Amino acid sequence: MLHRRPYNETSLLVDLFTEEGGRLTVLAKGARAKRSALKSLLQPFTPLLLRWSGKGDLKILTKAEAISLALPLAHTALYSAFYINELVCRVIENETPYPQLFQDYLHCLTALATCHASNESAVQTSVEPCLRKFEFQLLQTLGYGVDFLHCAGSGLPVEPQMSYQYRAEQGFIASLLKNNQTFYGDELLIFASLAFDKLGTEQKHILQAAKRFTRMALKPYLGSQPLKSRELFQGILPGNMK
Image 1 (spheres, rainbow, N blue to C red):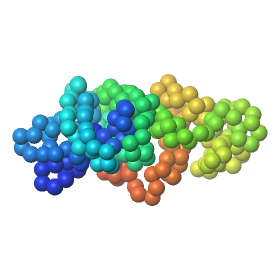
Image 2: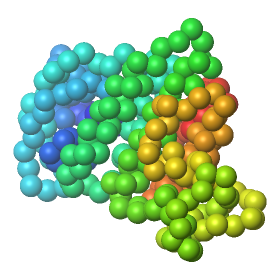
Image 3: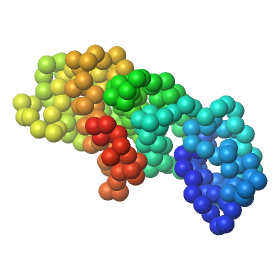
Image 4: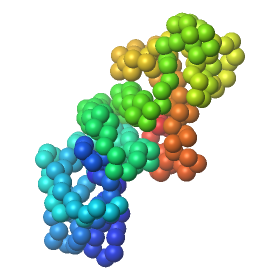
């Protein structure tokens, strides 16, 4: 379940992300009633086996069964999972199957659930690679084809120490300019490999560059409306991580 909201007096409208049906909205009749079993089942980050009926945009939920316990997400990891849910809600088409992205989504949530440490700063360090990897996978699913391995101007392989200017719909062009559009070759090579979890402490700048890039690349899909999860947790998360 990605999101839910009240409908009439006792029902819920529920946004789902499913392996075979993609993202869709279902009406859970009576889910808010005191004795409804759906009330406890329709919770975020609980794997569900679902059935629904209907041919229009709004389906009717006919069955819901938990197939495992909810993922143990807390604090920074939980806030980050809500951010991932909002991204999926906002950018992928309704009722279009995305089986690979669904698997990427599950892997991301599972990885977030393992982000345990003695302090929130350490948790943030382990959460960041999960978020960045999923953002790049989401961009790939959207067809955002950027060549991170070659200069868009010359076609030559990216050099780790060379600086490049990002040009939307073109790629990265070798340049000596230094601004918000500037990325270095070692950063682009990691972008291509998605090996964010392999970075050492001295490579923290690569994660920062990855976040800067995904914010730019996702902006056309998100539009001008700010992310509610980012606004909600901006004062809670250390360092405004998302």
